[in-house]
Image: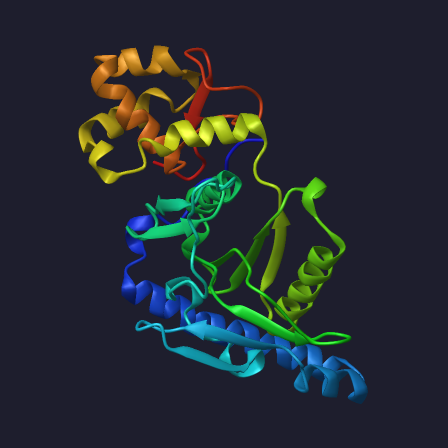
Length: 287
C-alpha cells in the first residue's frame, strides 16, 4: 500500500483554518444527526436525544466542566488539556512521555510506547489537523455504578469531523475494557465522530515512520533541493540513486526524508524497511 498524498499541507492549518474546520464540523454533524433522526422511528429518535452519555473536560486552569455529550460535543477537544495526569513512578512498567507534533508544533502526552507510536501515526496522517491525548472522561450508567473511561486520543480531521482513538493490543483487552470501548464507540456514533481501537502500527510501518519522524521538523526543508527532488523522482527511482542525482547525500537526504514525512514523496512503507534501493516516487497531485 502506498502512502496517500498529503493533499492539505500542514502549514495551511493555522488557527483560522482550525476555526473553519470546527465550524465545518458543527454543520457536518448537525446534518448527520438531523438526517439520522428524521430517517428513524420516533422511539429511535428519542433514544438519540435522551443519550445517557456525559463527559468531563479539563480547562486551561484545570477547571472541570461536566455535561451531556450532546451539549459539549462541539468543543475543540484537539486543543484541551489532558483530563487526567500521566503518572510516573519508580518501577513503572510503562513509559510515559511527550510527542512533539509537527501538525501543531505542540507536545502531546502518551503513557506507553504503543501510545507513542499511535501519536506518531496520527501526526503522520495527512488528514489530521491536530490531536490531543486523554481529551475527556466519558461517563455512562453501569449495572451497579457509574462507569467512566478516558479515551487515549482525539484527532480533528481536515473535513472538520472528529476521530476518537483507544490504544490497546488485542491480547490485553479484559472484559471491562471491551465494555468501555463498546460504550465509547456508541457515544462517538451518537455525535458523528469516528472511533478506532488500535494495537499500534505493524513493526515495518512503525520502523519506517519512526525514521521519517526524525526529519519532521521544518528545519529539514530546503526549497531548491526539494524542487530538484520532485523533478528527479517524478517517474520513480531508488532512494539513494535519486538523492545522488540531486547532490551530496548528506545535504539531500534530510530534505528527501522530510518530503516523505509530508507525503509529497511516497514509498511502500508496508513492504519492507527503508533502504538505499527503496523505490520512491512523487505523490499524485504534486507538481
